[in-house]
Length: 328
Image (tube, rainbow, N blue to C red; front, top):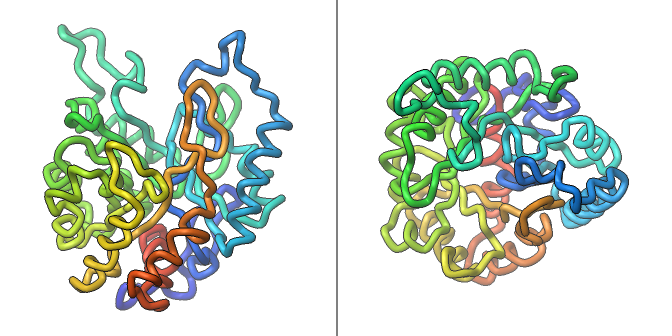
């Protein structure tokens, strides 16, 4: 790496193996492909028709491709429906690079396995156990339950509860940061109640600020408190990752566009990442039924109308995610 740019040998891990970092093109960094509420696949009234799931996801990925998208990051981690064989077939069929992730969270989605029941009260796994679990998914391949390991994860993702990070989630984050240090893949944090405190936890493990992306920063509470600018000033990537979602929790797309302009004008355009947190196929929960192409088809025109130049848009959509995802 020189001056923040990948050299000719720099690669990113995809489900079909490593690809040159410069081949990623337009990247959507926080999306979900097949998202299954843990255990829903065993419910009597849940249909897991594989051919229908494939058709649905292929259609959504082709739409993304037709709008100029080239790479999707499935940032759901372990135990939420991650299906590596399906993702390999989808990538071959659609021409879209798919980057899968290891990691987990928030705590309420984990179950008791990741607690130490011999203690009273039960305590979370220590960070080194999570680090070992995640590191093996990068170095040896991601687990297909009870069958095998497939390709390596290209990202470690963790999430905290919006009301505040629990002790287990803190251990998860420390383990994820240690995995990034060991393997060279980045960590993604969907922050909980205090983004700057949680950022400090990751950095305390020795992780460089530019190997971390903090997601959820288009929440109303974060924007009102100026958190996106504060995180970006630390050198960490800021993910405005609910583009297209306008509800009681998140700002509107117009407010997101204004925030992007503010960050660029503050000299922080190289810290911005965009995505929609869209769900390709949700099972057992509503999901976020939004096209992967929404950023390209709807939000980018809004950015241009807000006065953002094409070179800044290119940097946000191509250069920033490339630099984050490059293994180093």
